[in-house]
Image (cartoon, rainbow, N blue to C red; front, side, top):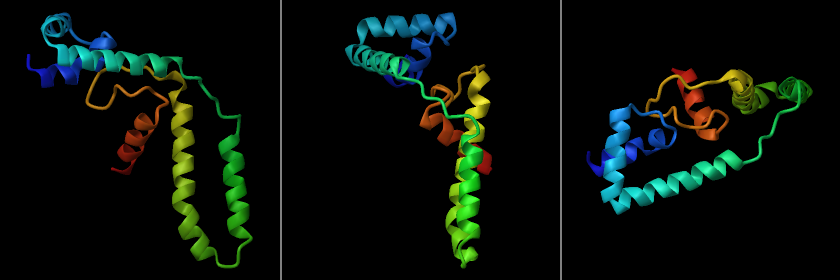
Length: 135
């Protein structure tokens, strides 16, 4: 395997998501390639930092309270059209964000594709899921 292919599979290699023959190919390549071994070490350090990062939970009904406050603010303003133009995208983002967070409580990865190796509550995972909803 070429270095490019190895580096594309390093995250899956760390997470033990490769088929046994693929994993063996990566292992053999790492024995002889200092650049890919260094890339593996960096990914392992990032993985360790992310696994040890504190988890924060959103208080119950936080998104409902926030949406209620936005509705009150926008309805008490005289020029609703401008306010709606400004707050509608923000409101949509916040609703989608918290809906996504709620749906992640029972999240398990089934397959590995190009972007599925983001941790479930990471901004990368949320960002790509939000992009997916726009299609």
